[in-house]
Image 1 (cartoon, helix red, strand yellow):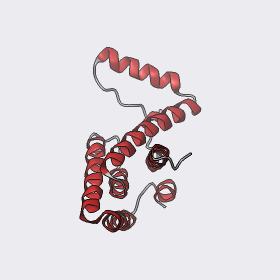
Image 2 (cartoon, rainbow, N blue to C red):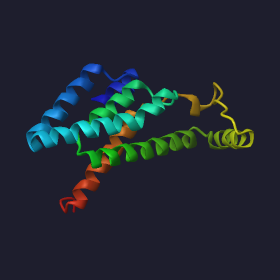
Image 3 (tube, helix red, strand yellow):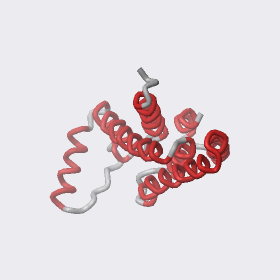
Amino acid sequence: MAVVSDLLHHRISNTLILLGLALGLAGQLYSGGVSGLGDGLLGLLICFALFLPMYAMGGMAAGDVKLMAMVGSFLPFHYALWAALFSLIAGGMCGFLIVLIRGQLFKTLGRYWLILRAQAYLAPTSDEVAGKPFPYSIAILLGTLNTIHWQLFASGLGG
């Protein structure tokens, strides 16, 4: 639902986030008792803490940070850490593919080369796709699915 909302409206509802948080933490409490609830809270905090700096630097919307925190509430803390990492990797890959598909790879690489030479950040120009937001919920979904697949594979259920 978050991905569809992000794609259609460029927004993820706080109601959806709060409902997900409640379900994630309730599921953790049900499956693991107080220890499971602690796991869910730690997963939530890890994901929130890893994504908050990107929001603070203007590279991500607040809804994406809240969505990642919600995802963390469903997972044991060590898998929440992997979900955040895989989501960041998926985000980088999605960004690369968007730049590549839109035919702006050399333009973007050229800007990065200038950044390295000037040792200062140069914002993308208004005509660069690298400066346009993209629905990061897709990267969070891909990273989370990868973590779940990896978790199942590691436990012998995936395959």
